[in-house]
Each structure stands twice: as C-alpha cells, then as structure tokens.
Length: 136
Image (tube, rainbow, N blue to C red):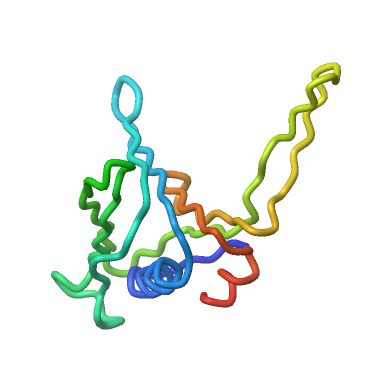
C-alpha cells in the first residue's frame, strides 16, 4: 500500500515499527559513477516532536548497526510542505527449483514485509504487511 507521509508521520511510523519488530535497513545513495549502500539493523534515535516543521524539528535520526555492532548515524531531513512516498508491501522472494529448467517462482512472505521510501531506502521488517499497515 502506498502512502504520502510528512516527516513527523514518517518518524512516528519508524519509531513504532523499530520498537515493536526486528527491523533492518538497506540505503542506496546514487553517485556520479555508481552508488553507495549502507545496511544493517536499525534503531530510531530521534524523531520530530511536533507536526510543525521548524528548523531542528524536521530530522529523523537513525542508527544503523552492522554485524560487528558498530553503528553509523543516518539522518532523514524533511522539507517544509514536503512528503515522502512510502510503500508497504510483503517481502518478495524467488524460489529456485534445483531440478527445474530455469523455472523461478516469485512468492510473497507472510511473516516479513518491506517499507520503501522513494526507492532509496528499504526497511525490512519481521512482521506481516497488515501489522505494519496498522501502525500507519
């Protein structure tokens, strides 16, 4: 399901999701000659405290932890009157048959979902899409 969320609403959603479920992040940043990726377990450090977008009240602070436990701080900054395109959907996996003739079947997992923000950030949540939709 697709939503358009302001920075305050997005912060509340991410805070609720990371508190309730195991959540990881894959962030893709485009560069002139390719791209950079950042991935790991995520926790929300700070969110906007009010619906009014003011200087300093428009930032979501995230900590992305790698497998070694080292954390990297990542910030999402919202523009005044700006909205983020957020899509919540069941996680898709490709099932590969070992004896088949290249037949690959795409299936949806019922116990995992993804939250995509503008196709640059993909949060993988260990919960059903319906459970996450209820938090919106």
